[in-house]
Amino acid sequence: MLKPNAVRAALREGREVYGLFCSIPNPVLVEMIGCAGYDFVVLDAEHALVDPEGLENLVRAAEAVGLTPFVRVPENDPGAILKVLDAGAMGVVVPHVRTRADADAAVRAARYAPEGMRSLNGGRVPGFGLIDLAEYVRRANEEVMVVPMIEDAEGVDALPEILAGGGIDLVLEGAADLSQSYGVTWRTRHPVVVDALRRIHAACVEHGVPYCALPRTPEDHEAWREAGVKAFVLGEERGLAFRALRGHLDAHRGGCPAGSDGVSGSDGVSGSAGVAGSAGVAGSAGVA
Image (cartoon, rainbow, N blue to C red):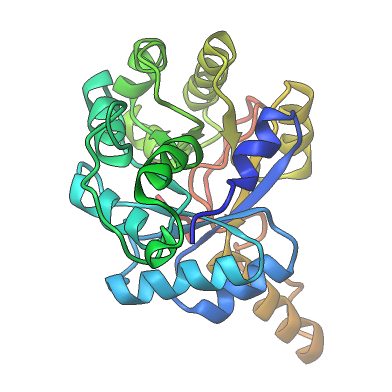
C-alpha cells in the first residue's frame, strides 16, 4: 500500500540518501540491501531478466524492510512504467533520456491527470480499496518520483531544457554509456566524460533538481559531497558480492591478493565516475 516516499522527504530536508542497483531478481537480496541500511534500491528491469510477478515480489521485499524501491525500466516503454508503478515502485528510473520529449513521455506515463495520463487502476498500491481512489491519485502524484538517466551526449546538451519543463524529481548520471556516446568507451574518467558529469550537476543546481552521483572511490564520494550532492548510488550487488567472494577465497588460499586479478576498483557500476579528471578504464563487470 502506498506510503510516504522516504527518499523524497529526505532530499527535501537536505539529508543524504544512499542506494544500490540490484540486478539479481531475488527477494532475499533485496531484503539484505535493506537490512544493510541502504535508503533505496534501484531494481533493474532494463538489463536484467525479471518477470512482472517476480518484480512485484521484489518490491514487497523492499517494503518489508523499509527500503524505498525504484525500478529502472527499458528505454522508451510507457507500458513498463505503468506496470512497475502498479506493482508499488516509488520511483521510476528512465534510461537514455535525451530530449524534453523523452521526459514528457515519462512524466505522462508516471503521473495521473492533470500532471500526466497514467492509466487508472486499483490493486495493491491503493490497498485494494483501503485508500480512497481519488485520494490515492493525489498522493501517488506527490510521492512517485520520475528519475531520468542522462547517459548520452544529446541528453547532456538538452538537460537545461529537460529540467526547465518540470516534472523531474532526481537526475541520475550514467557515465558508462556517456563514455560510449563520446567515443571513449568504458573510459569513465576521461576528461570529456568528467566534464559532462560536471555539466549535468551544474544544470541540476541551476534548476533546483537533486543530482544523484555514482562515486567509485571514497575520494569521488567526498568530492561530490563537497559539491553539495545528497543522493548517491554506491554500486551494484553483483559487483559487491563478487569482490567479497573473491577476496574471501584469496584470503584463505594464500594466493594473489584480493583484487589483483583486475577487479580491484570496480564497484560493479559502469558509469560511476567521480569529479577527478584522471583518465581510467571502468571495471568490466559494470552496469551500463
